Image (cartoon, rainbow, N blue to C red):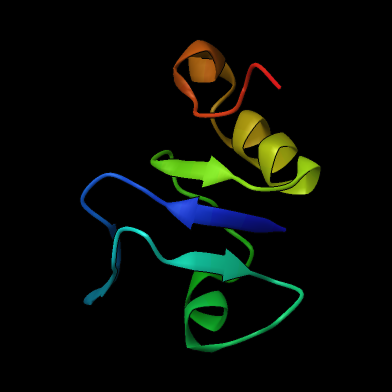
Amino acid sequence: MKFKISGAGWRIGNKLIPAGTVLDFAKPDKWTALAAGKIPFAAVPLDREALEAQVAAYPDAKHLLSGAWV
């Protein structure tokens, strides 16, 4: 799963993943470890897996998601 953080960033606990950061779960790093397979509302999916995860996480807001039209 690969996606880019948009908006003001993504706060997880007391950490903030900055906007513009690309998380790629195929290449684990400190951000993917923190995210643990989740995807935020304010993300741009960069692959089909991320798109499907985002739509599954926010089914009532599909029309508002970046890339949900793909």
